[in-house]
Image (tube, rainbow, N blue to C red):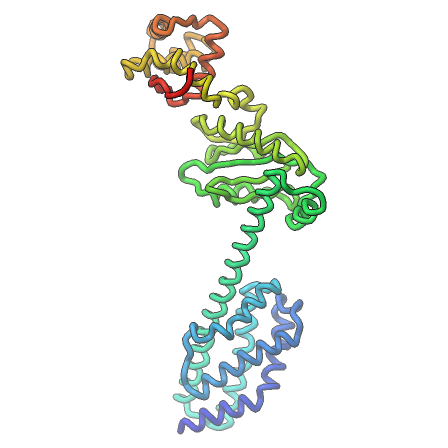
Length: 385
């Protein structure tokens, strides 16, 4: 049959446009839950656009590329901001296409269109459906990404201000309400860093997952997870180093953040990960003082700098001796050496440093030195004495 027959079918579809539109809108509203909160006039407008686009393609016999439908697909961005899921957007579009396909078959039968022409027109309709679906998804994702970026920037701005203590009064109340936060509650500032094998975003997801609305706000800043929580996270995982400050109201969260930074610095020196607060690490958070550390490094580690291998053996022995509460037998087992071998190493340490391992001051200073210098290097650090 001639091309004019296809054009006649298209003209008849245009004639029935209002009927097709009404049928499509009714099905969208009744069959797609996401559209029940959208104004019917809004749905009607987008349905008419979809029908005209499909009928015009049938008439011309040409399937547009998805990139050519970017303007029409902007309706997906409107639906995104209306809270309609992309699955519902696509389902609504497919329902309108089903309505037009059913009507096309009826008209084709009335006009006795040949099978080849019917098949060709069907292919056009399916092609339009594929192109427009791709355009809708792209447009929707574009809005989703833009919204995610805006939300991320807003969350970062809020956290920077709260942790710096620059939000107060009505502004603090208003901004906190955007995140479901009650400014009258107390929270702990948090800083966390993922260990190798775990990304910052994965760590953020793990920390956010158990939170209820209002229990905290977290984000990724400069590769670390930062923010505040109502409670200290559990410390069972070694996939990250997590530090929290003491509970404080939002107006004083800068104080909690300062403590969290000190706890984090001490926690990062530990070989294993976990969740830590000031009560867990106490004096270790003070062991970052560079002047004191320089003195203790020169006093207890520098004497072994001339023989690095021997120095490492002796210092590791002293470290494990202290870690095992100065119990010779336990420390020897941990080192896999004879007890007398350990005693010999401890004596060499005392000889080279002039210190006594039974002196309280020595024990305190050694614990500080090993905490501040976890690599155990015997090379003196540059710095004041």
